[in-house]
Amino acid sequence: MHGRLTALQELLRTPIGRRLVWTIAVEAIVGVGILGAGVMLSHKLGTHDRGVAAALLLWPQLLASIGVLGLDLAATHFSADPSHRRDTPASALAASLPLGLAAGVLYAALIPVIFRGDHLGVFPLLMVVLAPVNVAIMIGSGALQGRLDFRAFNLARGGMAPLYAILLAVFAFSHHLTAKTAAVAYLLATAYLLAVTGWLVARNGGLGHVNRALVRTMLRYGVVAHPGRLSAQHLGIDQVIVGIALSKDDLGIFATAVVLLSAPRLLTTGAGLVLFPTASSEHHAGRPPLLRSPMVASLALNAMVAIAIAAAAGPLVHTLFSAKYAGAVTVLRILLIGEVVRAGTQLLAEVLRGSGRHGLPSVVQAFDWVAFIALVTAGSAIGGLHGAAVGVVLVNFLTAAALFGLAARAGVLRGILGRAPSRPSCS
Image (cartoon, rainbow, N blue to C red; front, side, top):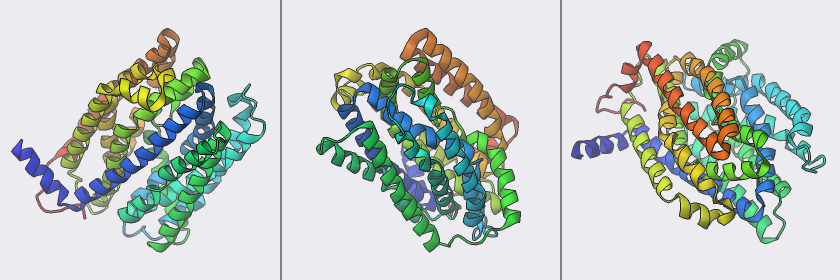
């Protein structure tokens, strides 16, 4: 035990340790904002309107995440390379913004199908703007992340979720909170994030110039790396399947359970946000990443939080969301079983991307999507909400086994999980 505490203290004295602490702290702030927003929506809206609000935000962002073709990942990876750092933001934006616009057009075409019978009129068209705006935010955030400017990176993203929660509270206290006003609040918070991210990129290294050769290199990297980031669970495909196979009421309950997964997921995301550009920086410098200590520390923290949430699931759901969401308790506990396993898979994938082995997570994600759609759809048909959650957990375990197995067979695990020297090596 003493040895583990000493190792943790040594980690916290390194640059990567300090980045982890601050990035995870900001993730906690983001998590509080998301939780507050979820609580207000669940209290003030019925399960059907809660599902409608989730669909309004989910679809344009889902299509943007798919349509960006990994250029956000390329923005991070090449911003960590001193020879490409200056021109990466402008080059990535030039290639990605048309893709974001195309995603918005596709969302507009799907509106009659997604919101059939919800009587929203033309309002869903307002959310089209989320697709290109989110692409621009992803590129700007990726540039700050790759430049290892985590002060600016965390400053930008730390304000959006709390602002969204505050705007929802304003609508709630004025008795105007609906699925539509919730979507408007999200649009305003997104506009804030876009403005702050753009300002910080311009202030910290600038946008640079469009470099056509760099655009081609980034596209090659992005297209290969992109499928590896498109986890079906991360993109909310489980919620899409539940909404299609079951009902909007069931989607509202499932979405409530997912809100309470935000704490362990945000811890993993925070760690991954640091590990990916750190591995990229080491890769461009010709060194192995040696990130065992931060990976183990992040997973241990994730496991402790998941266990605590599982133990308190009943009181949490009843206190935060009310008795009408009691069905979310069992769904939440089932999903938490696979959460630590999913975290380990995600962290390894982030390091592999930074280490130049970005194709391995993509190969595994191809398997993940097939298994996810098959098992979650079958689970929904057989066991309803509980069956869908069991399907998600089974895919978590299968995907982890596939990625760790491929990484071991490729001989790259030793360079990742080896022990780093005591001196700081990730500055």
